[in-house]
Length: 188
Image 1 (cartoon, rainbow, N blue to C red):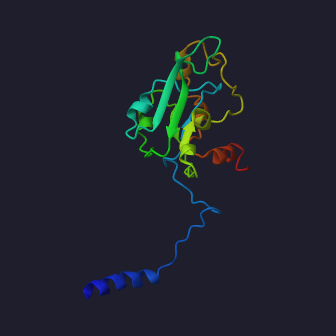
Image 2: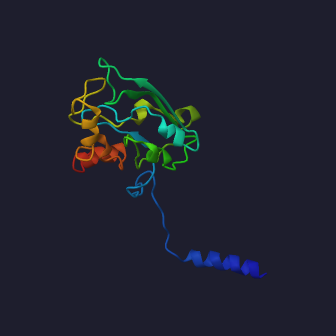
Image 3: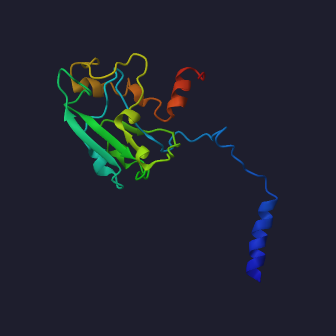
């Protein structure tokens, strides 16, 4: 009998508290900047990809959700400043547990996580995001790869300019819509 009284006591105590209702689709709640959402493959300020196809993120993933296939850059076709680039990059969000270990493993800070969390799909095959879906958008002053290196003659020039000129890593804490609004001064 005392179990019923305790249960009803909890129910009655919650009945008179103010309601906390989130009007989700119309007014999504604001997330913290360090929220782990959808992954973003970042670019250098000239548009080259930061990913060098090393596959460390795939090795670090405990859920085996990342697949990377590296390829060699050539002088005629250069996608990243290094010797290699990711020819194929896929993340299976049906498996991903959003732990962030892939980000910690990335030596070039190519892979970051955004605040975008609306990843639900009707078909499981649509939860496999490809490189084209994960790449950061080209911002003003960036050129679509492949193209020659523009920030210097060596890989060292790219990595030394990183802290001063981060490229598309800046704003990766926002979703694509928020990033464009932030860039335009709040206008969409």
